[in-house]
Length: 238
Image (tube, rainbow, N blue to C red; front, side, top):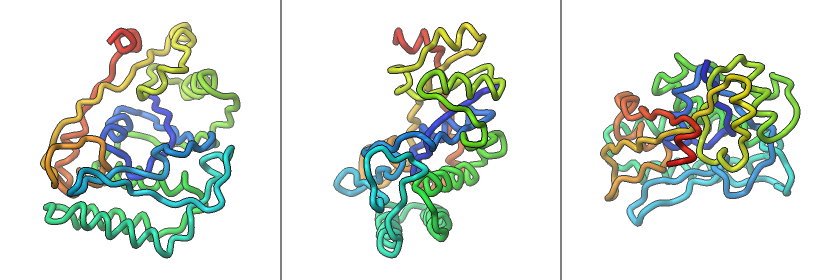
């Protein structure tokens, strides 16, 4: 049983979709502190001059709020602006209509918090590429597990009877690998392939929104979601 635990990200890059695709269970980890500059409320777009950030503005944000407490600003202006930026980024892309329709559907709803908005955007991409057929999605709040950092992650994986925990590279800074190993849980780190596909505006950039993959490849873009994962010892030594 492969477990992935992650904060929700706004229309995330392909690497996040690759991580989700390897999960039997994906846990939305949105009851933790929001960090300014994270990918919860922003993502890069390909742009004629290089790249541009698509950012959801926040309402009355203050330090210490959890992701599921931070509210997006009034949507009257920024949603329209986002869609215009996406139209320009995907100009003449063969499946631009698919990408824009997906974004418009997500933005057609109102959201109480930024975590719910970003979660909806991730799930929309997972649905488009068929990832949701093999992955079950859970909200961490439904598991009723307290604590913090490595111990909490371990307890979540253990409660879900996970045999393998697949994580992004940032976890190397805090994860207690021995704790997992002693319980017979294999920890693996993503081995991103960053497989290139045709894009607008010059050299390939793998770190832009997954909507870019939709716009340029359509459903066939699922073939680009193909990364593996390295055992934690191999990752640390690499």
